[in-house]
Figure (tube, rainbow, N blue to C red):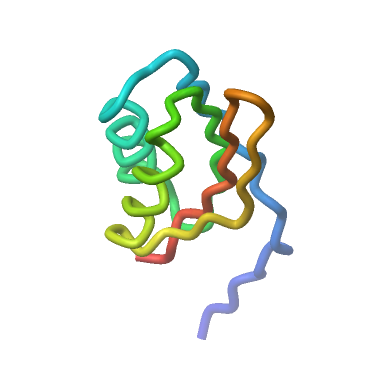
Length: 87
């Protein structure tokens, strides 16, 4: 039997998605595309200025099964920390 040495878990570097200035439905579509090509556990930091993203991004996460770990707003800026779910 061949033994494989397991590497220690390393936290993934957050992947920035600057979606500032994009209007509905583009922020949600770009997030969907980024998540589709990502590994399970990938962390995205999404920045949006479209107020509809506050509705669209959480709805997208319910649809895809991925998770919003944290969200915040500062003025017109919305920031979402999104974790890609296991396949």
